[in-house]
Image (tube, rainbow, N blue to C red; front, side):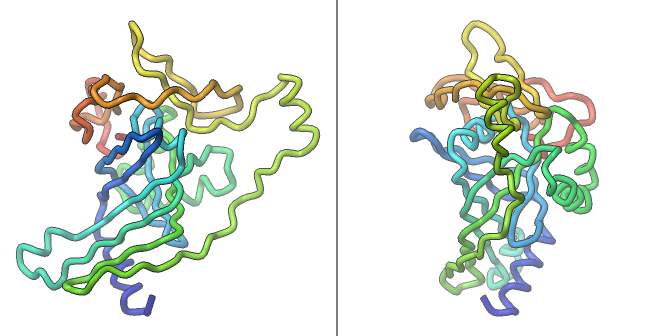
Length: 239
């Protein structure tokens, strides 16, 4: 990617707050309009409630895509339209991760209510790390650009930790755990922090079955999701 196009894409990301996140697992494809902030290496940072369908799918399969565009400019000048798509992996970043504070700062710096969202213990920070960037600018055909992988923090278990896990003394660091669809009542709510023993992955909710959605006060992008009443002061970023 040449410098001019890179600058154009970075200006796009800086000027937009929402994009569309796509997650998929077990034959189920889900899209959601969601807030974001940009980080290094073309990563995007998101605040997601673990009860949402996108969180459940990301737990089962990390493969995800995210697209940002400036469609509003087409009302005056279609030649300025640009869209950027990111294909890669979506992962949960726990509060004890070495990179959590850096991602939180990026989210808080871009969004006025970003810090408040991520300080909510019921909201988890997720990062999409792309391996492919697809850009379409103006009337030009879309181009694909490979993204070099960045080095992640070493999370390899020590021998002592592995033995303690096998003895049942501790659990592995908490991943974004799945929450079963309702069976005669509300699903149990997990914790976002600390260590625990992860439950077996829940089956992917089939189309047509109710799934508990986020509590951000906005209608879900999936017509089969039901929405809990919004809480006072919540924004749309946690859907």
